[in-house]
Amino acid sequence: MKLKAPQISIAPEDPFGEDTLERKESAEILAELLSSLTESSVLSINGTWGSGKTTFIKMWQAYLVQQGFPCIYFNAWANDFTEDATAALIAELGLGIDELDIKEDTRKEVKEIYEGARKLSGLLLRRAIPTALKIATYGMVDLEQKTEEELADLVSNISSEQIDQYEQSKNTLVTFRESLEAMVSKICGEQQLIIFIDELDRCRPDFAISILEKAKHFFSISNIIFVFAVDKEQLGHSIRSIYGQGMDADGYLRRFIDFEYRLPLPDPVKYTKYLFNRFGFDEYFRNRVTRYAQYEPDEIIETFAALSKSFGLSLRTMEQCFSTLSIVLRTTPPNIGLHPILLTTLIILNASDSSLYENYINRQISAKVVRDRIKKTSEGKEFFLTNYGIALDAFIEAGNCDYKELLALRENYKVQLNKPGISDDQEESIALKMQVIDDIMRSRRGNISKYLSDKINISHRFVRSEDSAKDS
Image (cartoon, rainbow, N blue to C red; front, top):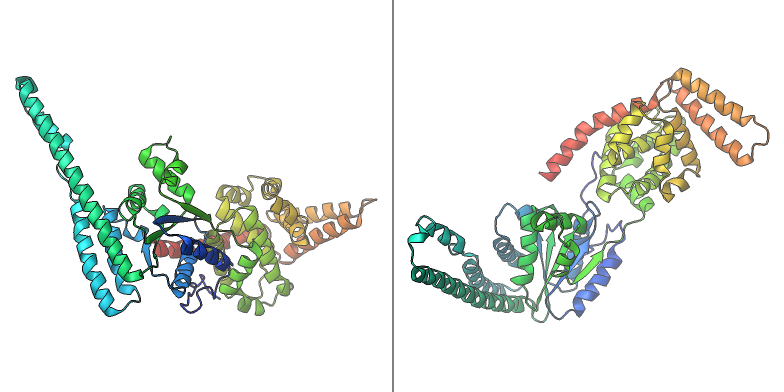
């Protein structure tokens, strides 16, 4: 059993060999789109944080290379330590050329053209002394002592210098683009060069915006296509932090992005089963020796799939929940009851609504509050109609009870069971809830929720350490 899920392997000969999220179809559709483009374009792959954008574009990149597209990958977040986005893009372009599968004599020619383009980009990056600074310098002199003629000459000189700088920059930009076009033509022939830009929404706002603007203005040539992997909502926050909260972020992005594609969400049951296998839980449950060990895998999978959808968990959060679950399982002997339905629910509650989780564990809210929160969505309502959902209903009610309270709750269920006119469905539901109470009582452990939450809290000492290492 694994503490965290291993990295997905992307084999060049079979890029979608581990395509658990079933996104090969999206890659094929997008590849057809790229093949039809004849001019410079910017495509955004839109998905929320943790939706698997990076994995998708790396699989898609490998697939495009198979189809004959030269591709370069640029991690914007790994490069936002630099102040200038243009310099970062130019440098990454040079590194990408070294990795392209082209003939050595062609590579040499491309490198020569690249060096010329790099020098031109240096000219574009130079900045003259700002006009405002020059005017401020004259502020050291008493302007009242300056004649109107002297001030007119000053303004005229500054204006002429600014016009000269503009013309020089414009000419340099044209030459720069021509060099880029020649370079890409050498690499690709009639084919386009695809530049993937990932993790843009994780960058500091000024760098993220600069990358967008520079990609459109400096690299807008017919044989380069940019693909941005973004969380559009998060990128909108970055735009508003730079240009003001009243800024129309969508309108701004439309100036730079020609096509937008939203990644479809995977089936939660399939993805949960994938995580279950990827974390190696099968081996753990094969060695369990408890009364209901054979049912525990299905209890975890069905509960996790339903509630992760009900609470709207991202793929990354689902994976983090499985890391927590993995540690809880590792620290639980094979003969000790787990109560997987309640354990899974508590892990998801803690990940999605920590206040609700804490209030429930500390008995500051009733079971009804938790039940109503889950029932807010259609997925939650439907789950409570299943046997696993009925069992969860009883677990939520009984989870915070001590042994004496469990006896009283069981007696209450017994009274309901003996009421006249009870339907068969109601009888089955109450019988299942009584079975849950018996299971908790058999463990001779009162307040089962507190017991499980203690194990979850201990596990977070490990999970958070891993996450911080992964994000550093």
